[in-house]
Image 1: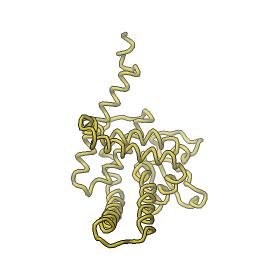
Image 2 (image 1 turned 90 degrees about the vertical axis):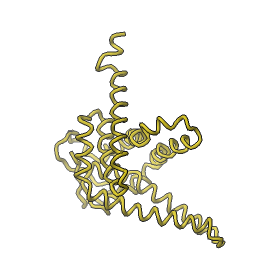
Image 3 (image 1 turned 45 degrees about the vertical axis):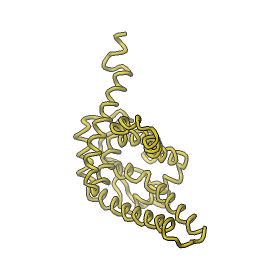
Image 4 (image 1 turned 30 degrees about the vertical axis):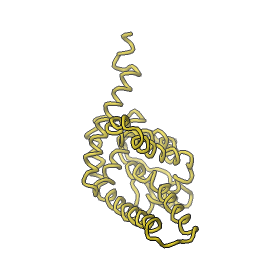
Length: 231
C-alpha cells in the first residue's frame, strides 16, 4: 500500500499532473480574458502541455509566461487573423440563415468546406508556434499540411475540444470538470496525439533537450525554409 502512495508512484504522478493541469487551466483562462491575448495564451498552453506529455515539465507558471512573452507578437498577429476569418464565417452563416434570400446549395456546401479547411489549418497552428521558430506564412502552411497528413488525429483533436462543450450544454453536472479542465484538458489530450507527429519533424540523431537545434522541413518542398525548436 505504501508503494501506491509513494511520491514516484503512477498514482501520485497522475495526481500531480492533474493538479498542474488545473493550475494551467486557470492561467490560460485568465490570459484569454482580454481576447486579444488568446493566441499567446494558447501558444503558452501548448508549450507547457507538450512538455508535460514528454515528462519534461518544470515550473508550470514560469514555463507558461516564458512562452507567453516570447511568442506574444507573432501569436497575437496570427490570432487576430483567425478572429477576422471567424467573424466573416459567422456573418456568412447568419446571412444564409436569417437573410431570407435563397442561396444555391453549392454556396452553403462551399462555406462549410472552407470552415472545415480552416479548422484543419489551425489545429496544429499554436502547437507549432510554441515549438518551432518560423514565419507566420510557413507556420500556417505547415499546420495545414499536418492537419491533412494526419487527418484521423486531426479529427480526434477537434473532438477533444468539441465534445466537452456539447456535453456541458446538455449535462449541467459536467460543468465543474469543464471549469477546471476545459482548456488545459483538451490541450493535453491534443499533445498526446500530436507528440509523435512532432517527433517526425525532428532529426533522429539529435538529443531532445532544451538546447538549440534545427528541425527538418515538414515537406520536401519546404527544405529551403529553416525551422528551430524553441527551448
